[in-house]
Image (tube, rainbow over all chains, first blue to last red; front, side, top):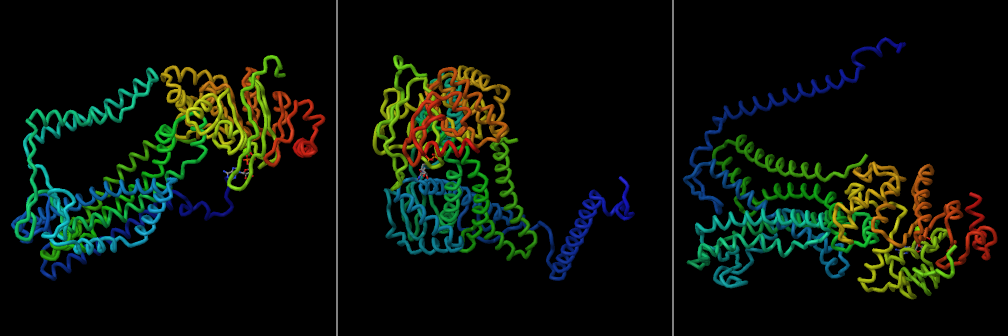
Length: 389
Length: 251
Ligand SMILES: Nc1ncnc2c1ncn2[C@@H]1O[C@H](COP(=O)(O)OP(=O)(O)O)[C@@H](O)[C@H]1O
Ligand SMILES: [Mg+2]
């Protein structure tokens, strides 16, 4: 086409050129900024006589950690201390995600139920818990747990279990070589359940006969580990906690810090998940359920084949973000002395002065956890996306 | 057209009353529909047409009166409700296809779960009905990939897969663009020719004239007039019917 104005043909008006140019300029600016920060930090550290580098990871930390999933003492390295912190973070996050999911799904379903009492309780729970900052939740439960009785007057919910201001302890089976095989057998059971479901579905498609798999599945799941356990002579010795001096020894122990942090972030996140579940169920158009009823489907089938698949699409993505924020909120453990990654990272930073490296480690860990959760979510979304024009 | 000697009532509404809270949506509705009869229901918006046909498969429950479908009385009894629903198909204004399932899965779901039909048989029947509504080539698409007219034809086929003896249609063409209305009406005319018992809520008077055995006019929750199409369109007894017909026929 003939252009009247000469400047219109100039390369500066080309869309492609502009987009490349903008990106080049942005990249240049970011590099400059990065270089400035890096050299600035380096200079300052050099002036303060702090050597940069990762050597501190292999030197002895010299501090104790209140609780650990793996063996650890003050003679171990900073690297191992950080690993302990990471595992503690992972432990509270995984427990929190599981508990918040159960609580949230229950409360979300309760909110839309026709049972007035249930839905009212659920509404109160949601409104109170999600409108209070998560910091307060954690501090609140941290305070509550210290108001519990001392070990000598501990609350005993059942034989061998104790609830007190030093946390919760309960009996736990003593480790036995047979348990490894019981675990393997459980895995076999899980595979068996998958196979059973596939078989039931095939059979239904072939013959039309609907085979309920709930009880059969439970049997298939439990039988292998039970049989293996019996074959080993049913080894079971309970490690029962006992009061020695001022503290309980043995059994399964949950520290007050872990419990307070766990309950705090579970209640907080559970409220958000409840809202997500409620809106997911309500997002399924009423016409969908009417059409299914008109076809003669029973309520259970409608829930399983019509409502849930559509509701889950709405529920899963925002729930994943809740899992992410729960994981990040677990760093509030620092407030009540739970030795999570941030807590131990802070101590490391203070003792070694290697602030850049310590913070880099913490950032990388949280980033990695978040990326793993996000990848799972994206895979789910790709599988579940409704196909449309 | 329904011959008196072979008349076999399949739907009976006797003194049917229905309230939504304080609001009375149906007042003393009485009608008997015979096997093979084609009934077209019309009336102004809000007159209770949907409410009436939704009572027939108990998507709504009534408070007073009797509904008897194929000798089964509709009460709170879940067995009866199930029995009636498996004999009565329903097509909605808004299609209500399941968006997360392919067309073929929409069609086979209920036969497999309710009729306990093997998958292969259910798919064979589904393909037969898709051919009848002339879209077998869409079987493996998702509802969102089809046009409105195609979706409504799938919805009709989905109901037919349960092999119902009665079909209810609630304004099946009202949500469609004008150029798609005919393809849906054609399918319904064919169904009528096959002798299906049908109750159709619609304002498509051309369709009514060709298909209906009986015309029903409703207003304010009451059945105002029941008549054969000849009488209904030429010399309706009620003034309200007259007024309504003038309004929609001059449009
Ligand atoms: N679920 C409901 N709750 C309250 N009122 C309703 C409900 N469904 C319908 N109605 C009322 O009942 C009357 C009849 O509705 P409907 O049967 O849908 O009319 P039509 O199908 O003839 O347009 C209307 O006044 C409508 O507002
Ligand atoms: Mg209506």
